[in-house]
Length: 184
Image 1 (cartoon, rainbow, N blue to C red):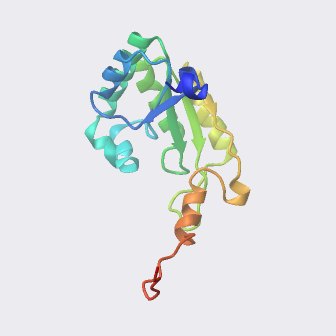
Image 2: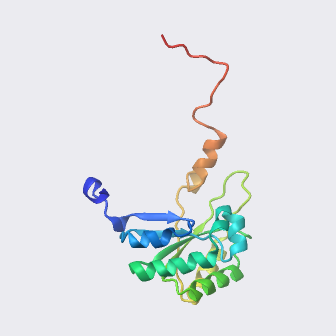
Image 3: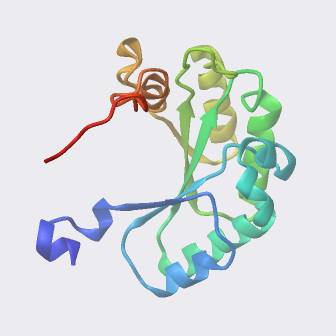
């Protein structure tokens, strides 16, 4: 086990998913003590499918129902990841809708707001700090425990998502098909 081999306790591990139908019930039955993080990124099915194409396979209401069942079985709260994209999913109406649907399904969880880290030529932008705080306050006013992930490394283009973008522009190893290497 990881605990014995590496000294990592299950409560220190997080299992992250966008949601795979029928998987949360099996995960709950395994009785792991790890944290479950579900990537939502939208308060409704239509927007979620636009942002997370694989979400078409698992309707949001079914996912939230399964998250509630997961909590009832494990007594462990679910962490919901929500990347804030300026002008896409960060409005007060989105926050209200998210708070309402989480309460509707009696989900015992925590929303982790993740302000988007902009990348060169990306289609999304980071919301203003004021908009981030307003979104957080709207969720909290509906009784939803919420935190904002602190961004580190963005000034050096090293924050989440930025390194991948830089690597795609300047890969470490470029194949040169005109060069042959002979090994004797």
